[in-house]
Length: 188
Image (cartoon, rainbow, N blue to C red; front, top):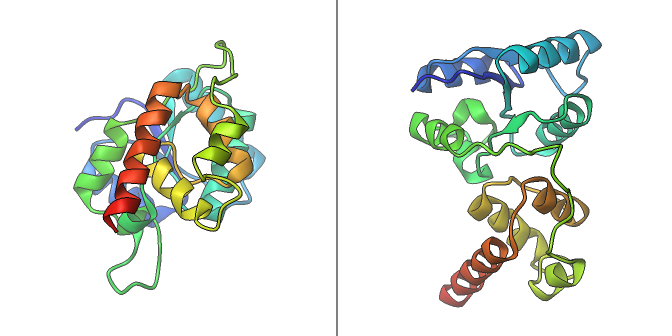
C-alpha cells in the first residue's frame, strides 16, 4: 500500500511501524511540545503532498492532533482504537505496537475535514445527552466506542460535538452508530 501524503507520527518507533505496514514518508513530532520548525515542516508537507496526522490514542496524541489541526487546517486524520495500540506486555500504548493490518485499515479510512464547508452539525448536545454520550456514568466508554465505530478517534464530551461537525458526521451515521452502541450494551 503506497501513501502519497506524509504521515505525522510522534516518534521513531511509530515511523518504524508505519514503514513496516505501508510505503510512506513520515514527520516525527518528537513529543507533544511541537516546535515551530516542526509545524513549518508539516505546513510545507501539507502544501506539497498532503498530511495525515496519525498519533497515539492518548492525551498527548490528542494534544498533538489538536495543535496541528489549529495551525495547519485541512490536514487529514487517521485513528486507531486504544485496544489496537496496546503493547504485547500490556505496559505501553502507541501506534508502534499496532499490527500492520490495523495500520493499513486506519490509513484506508482517513478523514479529511473541509475547512470551506460549514462546521455546524445537525446533531445537538441534547442528542449526545439522550445517547448517553455525555452526563452518564458510562459516557466515556460509549464515546470511546463511538469514536471507533465512526473512525473519528477518542474525545471528551466537549470535543465530541466539534469532532462530529469537523468530520461532517450526518444524523443518519450518528443514529446508526448509537444503535450499534445500544445493541452492544444489550449483548453484554
